[in-house]
Structures are given as structure tokens and as C-alpha cells.
Length: 270
Image 1 (cartoon, rainbow, N blue to C red):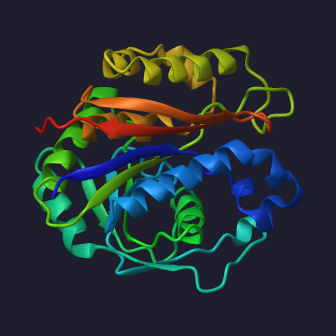
Image 2: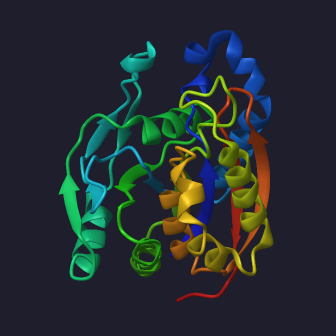
């Protein structure tokens, strides 16, 4: 089997009705994007979902892979502890990823029974839409240069294509957290420019990877984003430019950029 699907989805806690409450209604476009992604993954009978989460590890100089055989969701920091929200891990494939890539990249394994919120929120929402694959959580090494993050994704794709499972990869992340004065990180004039640039780049397709790698570091540093490393790693998984992209939704109602993208994989393999 080879890679069957790839997406970028935001992980705002407000997307969960029990947390967002009255504010949840503002996320209709993003909720619809999640529904489209869930339908695609169900149609393709995805067995394993690899989630690229920026919040799974505090060590940003290494790629962390969670090999826990079972994981649960606990969002008590957001006032919500769901009942019976557990997921099976896929330790065999996770270990193969480590064995195949550890000679070329800094990698360490963890066995965290509780999912970080960057993986917990999309997992919970997709499960509520009828999807329950095995989960592998990978934390991208965001302190490494972009080229190395991209190359990790390229190498990860080779491992994926050698498995006998139907696999999808999900980049979990939010764009700028500084779009408005009410934003959690305060306001930055560069925040809107960053979000617009990311949307433009992901819409271009032909030069997407090169444009991402050449993003101005000063621009990204002031945005408080958490999606760039997952996006770069995902672009590597997609073999750089071997895809078509579909922008499903972009919302910014709460001063944070929430972008949802579906990537249509071309037939070429690496």
C-alpha cells in the first residue's frame, strides 16, 4: 500500500462543542472541512493516521515518535475530559519509521499514554465523524533547518510506501496567533501577511516547497504560528510538489488563523 491521503487541519479547542460552547458556531466552515476530510478517509478505508503535531514534544531539535499501544484524550486544561476517548497506536510501523530514519535524523521514541492537544483535538473530532484508525504521533523537529524537516518527510514517505496498511498523514497546526489586538499573543502587522502568504503558496502547487523553504525567517518569527514545521514535513511526505491542493477553509474569527487544506496525491512515487 502507499500513502492514500494527506491534509492540513487546525486544532483549536473551540472546535469541540463542549469546549467552544456558544463560540463553536463560528467555526462552521472549519467544521465542514473536517467533515469532508473524514468522508475522504472513510471512503479510502484508512487504517493508520500519522499525525504531525507541533505540541507532542518539548525537544524541538529531534523528531519524536510516540509508540504507545494505546492513547487517550485528556483536555482538562480546556475544561473537558471526554469519556471513552481512546485510540490504538501502531507501534510496529512506528518502530519501522525509527529504524529506517534514525541513521540520518535525530529521533527518539516516547510512550505517552495521553495525547497532546495538537493530536488529541483532530483525533477526537474525526472519531466523532465515524473515523477510528490506529494513530502514530510524530513531533517535527522545528528547531532544525527547513531542509532537514523536508528531508525527514521525504524519508518518511519511503517507509509509508513499504507498508501493507492504508495510511494517511495529517499535519495539525494553526497559522498566526497574532492577527488582531485580541489575539492570544497580541497583534503583529506581519501576522496577516504570513497567513496570506501561506495560503498563496499552498495554492500555487508548482513552486510550493521552494516558496515555503524560502520564507522570510523574520516574518515567521513574529507570528507565533505552530503549523509551519508540520506543513514542511508534510510537503516532504508529498514528494515536494507531487500533489494538487484544495483550500477547504480559512477562518480567523478569534485572532488566530485556522487553515484547512486537502492535498490530492499524484501517482508518482519516490
